[in-house]
Image (cartoon, rainbow, N blue to C red):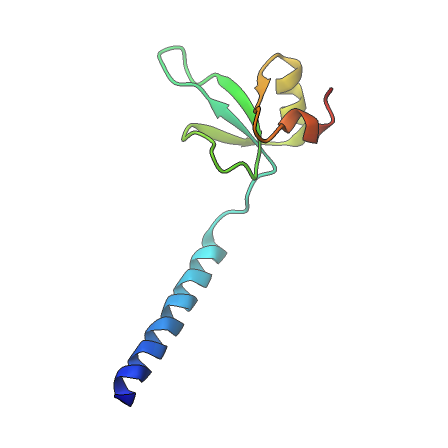
Length: 91
């Protein structure tokens, strides 16, 4: 019985280590993200999100704060859920 318990403890420790290594390899979360459209016209920006927004579409690109401000100034809409315009200080 104790051998089975030792195997469980070792497996759990190996799982935690693997998860930690995976997190270390993951790139840092961007501060701002622009969601890109799809289609024949190319990948044009459609919406600006805060980087922490979990429900961003698959077509996206990390951008800087200045690029996010410029995109909003050009008329690209801000996400209604994460309120990227409010976080950027745009009224």
